[in-house]
Length: 375
Image (tube, helix red, strand yellow):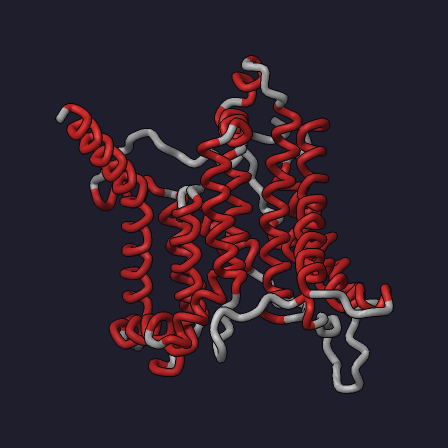
């Protein structure tokens, strides 16, 4: 009887903590939707019809559900990348560049490795290699920033922005040069198609959803396990909360900073790699524009929790996927979706606004984005 009471009490505590953590994000989404509806009305549209189109385009059919999951897949990986960095007290604003270098290296392994070796490679070897090299490249790209942070105090926000420029411009140079598809019909910057042996198979015949989506969910569970159930996760969270206390406790703070950025970059690189091997089957210039920056909003909305990131990724994917149907029904521009996303980010980041509007008492929680310049 006593143990049953304790179990019920623990369950209530867990449920209460989940409700407390999700209340402000939920109200931020609701408020953003209301603001969006008001703007739609002001410009002469029908908010009810617009949002109906958005829901139909996202969840109204099997194909719509499939496409929402396809959009959610890179968002989950990129959102986890930013969220993991947040947990370590770092602001990885470079997911866009890490995603790009992961995609370009993965596509290179995908189409060029059989040519280099002179024979076809079994899928059981080729696909893991294409994914592995892309993921590692993302980790290396972010690891450079982590090393600069750990040993020179160089701020990761500035350095990741600069690394974005280097990554995106280098990718453009390669896709317009040595890696460009030389097919007579091709006139745009993109690589050749990767080999069939480097492709992730679809989950269902006739739909674009692929096994990378399932892998994304498994990785989200792994990140939750890493952060909450392992010594490394404890060290990452401790350094994120107070690096001085972590150092006093015997944690190698420099090592954890570098490792956190490497893991974050690997997740971002995974987003690009999975898009190449599971969906596009090549790297095309500009295919991923916005993923890395949307990931910041996703991590914030998900409160840097892996489950929250997955749910926020589905929300952003649904808005992106349903925008076309909304535009078809109402002739409203798809840019409206970006505006609603901006409202969501505004209300989540400045949650004092939401707490003031709905008269919610603050319980002292906050997201630590950065510990200061050169800290």
